[in-house]
Length: 315
Image 1: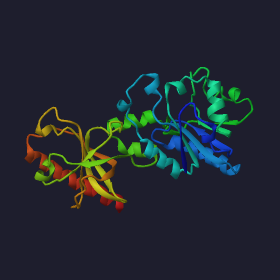
Image 2: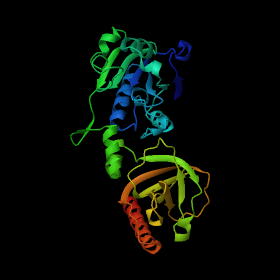
Image 3: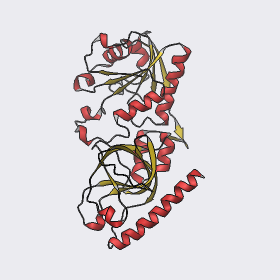
Image 4: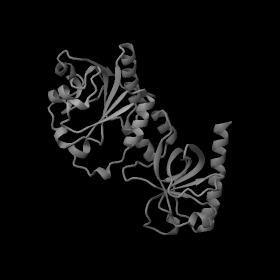
């Protein structure tokens, strides 16, 4: 897959000359609904012997439209994770357009001319709720008018699960509840984050549960605070683990939020490693214990429950 980063106004020499099926969307999470849209484009491309292209943005449009600080956005997938998902789905060209004020101010016709026609699209594929400007004049129903016969438009209906639309919003709500089984169902894969292992206060080691402290970017969306059945990826290997998101309230109020992972039967030093963490199942919510002894007792039970989870899953 070739990644093409565009900043408005781009140069036509940056665009491959081949005709493509162009799939449009932001695709945060690349969930099952998004996958259906991309798979529709993939099938069209194969049937017509065309390349499959996807166009997305480097940041969420609300940063420009609602004047939000970029570091305050919380994404289900980083741009790097999104790239990997797209490659796995068979995308040939991934256009990453910088969502700037100048790009956002394009009238619908100019957007279609410059970012669909000039990208050599034979077909433009999108979800039913895709917009490229004000909804009343720039939704999928108006797209054929702006196309002017230069490309065909394909609209993919909403993908539902148990009668409800699969959406990034719904997934974020489920994450806020700690319902990771349903998050996994709607994503089509287990939710994971990326970060760097850093030095913590070493309290876990003193308690008999040495943890890897994970430093994440501010833009990473974390599940609800709690203790989870997790997995941690070091290098190319996933290890069963017990993950915690919380403030360590047992040792005082007002502490920073941390992500800590206790890896089962693991005794290596991994400080400085770039790792990934999967969040499989919420064991319990975070609580402040009366002291270290009560906390250790609960952690031992959490480990028993974590091992039981993996034994059942691997049976």
